[in-house]
Image (tube, rainbow, N blue to C red; front, side, top):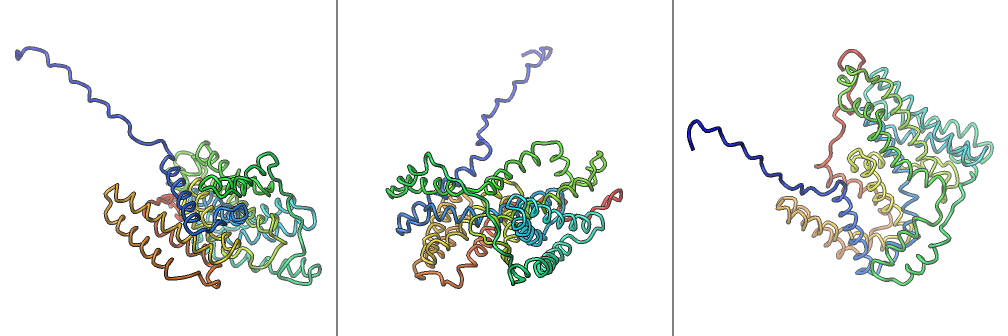
Length: 421
């Protein structure tokens, strides 16, 4: 080629095919793997109640307050406010639901629960956003306030009726509805004890049997939260307050307003979570201490879900299922679940081996081996430990998932308007 010849045009690099799986595919795969682990555990241990209609119904009812508390946490922490006070807001919600439900019916009870929870959120917002109080200190104070205020109100209002300051009289519940068309068909499939098919029939049958309007509303709040926070201009601005409030303010975002809206909505959602303990099937009314730490478990489910509604739904289902399982047949069925966890962790070890992540593979394999030894060495979990099973699951899941989490960058940041923090 001559030196005077024009240079040859550069060839464009070959486009590499996009090998990434569609968003959510990995999560869907692990949902399927988890279900298979439960199905195998049920088949190998002959524990037919692992996926029975009754177990699924109990798990769903136990998951709802955790789900709503976690959704409240998502709203608050995406705006940059840590909300440890979810437990107190749930307590406000339980009392409000009993008060409104007793005097005016379940729908007014639900509204009262949301209002009482929102008032708790307003107090938290005033303390943290306006006065710059440490978020943890404010949340702990709100939890104590919830216990004290509801005890005083119960003594004032419920004691003359129920003769007990720690509980309300019986409160009307929401009616429940079941699918008339496919319900009997699913029940028939469940009773055939076919591997996989009967299990899925039991799960679906449990989800469509004895469902209240409050349950449907709670489940609908998951996609609603996603659409508002991730698919709207308001949600983008709110999340920017949790990532960099100084930059958001410089772009004209009203940071204080968005934080107030988020924390008040957080309290309302936690209050509705408290209402599920009073107005759904299984609840009799307000009872002192009935939240039983579910606000904290909701925070753990939120962290497990990486501050996102979809992951939170999975975490709430896990904790609610574990909590509800003990109501079915007791300690033996929980041991069958332990066997299912062994299979699931074993699958994780194989996955890490295929990814050539040797350390993670060894750790997962060691955990599976330790749990397998526990399964064979212990006949059944002592009944005294059964109420704490969800808490053990909370710790274990958070320990496994901690490495992939990313909280909002300015979560807990003491922001002062016009001062850059």
